[in-house]
Length: 232
Image 1 (cartoon, rainbow, N blue to C red):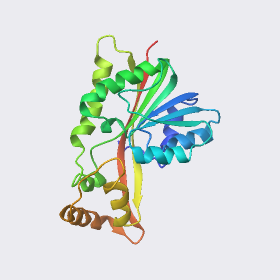
Image 2: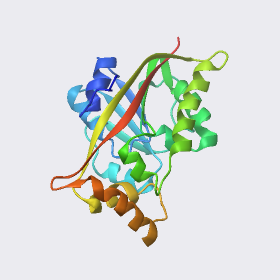
Image 3: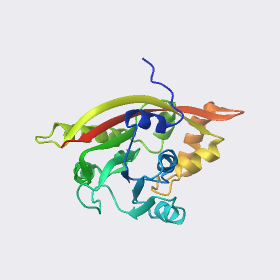
């Protein structure tokens, strides 16, 4: 069965968790785009975003919405007390956690969630036309598989605090006006140096070119959401 096409992942989160929060932590929040939408849909949420990218963190500090706080920290060492949150979000961020820290990150997440709280993990699937372009300079096959394996280990561990309550697959449309936008957004992020040489840039541009139209380049990114609940 073909996964549904979702233009707004918040609709899926709302389907799985109709009344999220009110205390929410996002691990690897980036620009906290979906969190800002959540605060509009559910006023009164208390949100904390953690980010290790110093540049993005400073940007977040300059433009917080009401109800939003930001701290510079990683998921493997969350600077919060036990049971402080109702919902934890990891949106395309678990695979960015260092491989040897993924298990600790999930243990820390369980620690700061209250019993009955949820962890919403949304991860890109290693597949699709966009992935074929990206892997020419940033092959994430190993780290994406490791993220899913870490979730499986957390669920299977003796005395695990986790229960998986849902899995959902969907496709997310991704649009770039031109290759310059792709290069800026995907090849030169503030959180990573992909060591782009002129040769790599030329090779990626050649792979990107067949996807370009007069309206830009359109892709779909396959995604997998796993919803875990902290046992009581």
